[in-house]
Amino acid sequence: MLKPKWSRLGLVLLPLLGACGPAEEGAVESSALQAQSQDIAVTNGLAFNGLAFNGLAFNGLAFNGLAFNGMNTPEFHGWFQQEPALRDMLMSYMVQCAVPLGQTRTYTSPRTGVTYTWQGNLGLAPDWASGMPSTVKEQQVVSACLAAHGNKYGIRIPMSVLGRNANAVAIPSTSSELTTFSHKEGCFFGNLFNNEGIYAVSDAPPLHVEDSTARGCALSTVKDASIQECQPLLRLPDNCGKYCIADASKKFYASCTYNGVTYQPLTTRIRPEEIYTCGDGVCQVSEKCGTGTIADSCMSDCGVCP
Image (cartoon, rainbow, N blue to C red; front, side, top):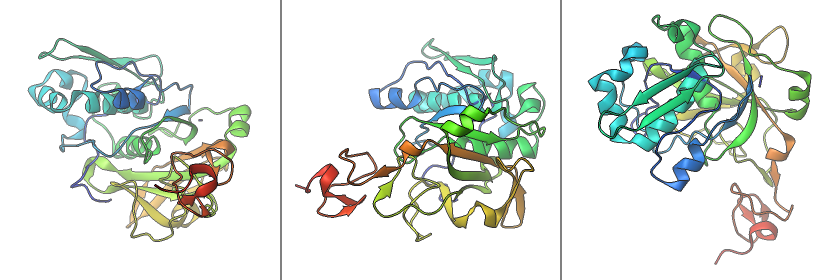
């Protein structure tokens, strides 16, 4: 239902711990991070994205290196304690993506005694979540899930996530969900866990220069592929149809191929109101001050720059 420059971020190569669903956060170091990592209210594929890529450091821990008992290893302790707030946020998304709804994963820091609880939702990696080694498809679809939940501003925006888990079971969706989230947004695919990168492609016509969205990774007014605003997530040119094959239901893409590798993707939809227009009287996070009438220089909404 609902790249890449790994030197700056290198998305977390941790074991899949979850699916896209509400997450109870542990101690958070700042109000900004708390806003980003608050509960991600999700029912089936309905989700609040908001994973802020910038500032997340992935140190290359292997996907299968931290199974359920892996959170009690010195390697995990060391990795988590380097940046507890950021890595708590990351783990909440990991668990939401990989683990089924109704299950949780819990970690208690031996250094601070703080317990972190992360709730599952989408169940995209059933083998891994049951304690078996992850499959390549599980790595791919959880990578796609992390990418779909990111945005350039690190704020929470509702969206619909569609696709299949690694065992080809479709994420449930309803007609009301598809009606509410009527604006096609993008497709996401790749593999963070073997350094193949992660990619976003628009599933909608390009935005007009006066329009913008806080999502901003798949949909963009920027046509120059050399300008990347969501690294390590790499926005590819053209649209999903160039890289991906649609599922028979036509609701989402079943596979995407890039650089000779075929991936299992996820497809996203957003509400029409998540597309902002210069001139609507509200200075949105994706708009800037200026003397013009475009999103990057919107005098009517954001005023003239000081």
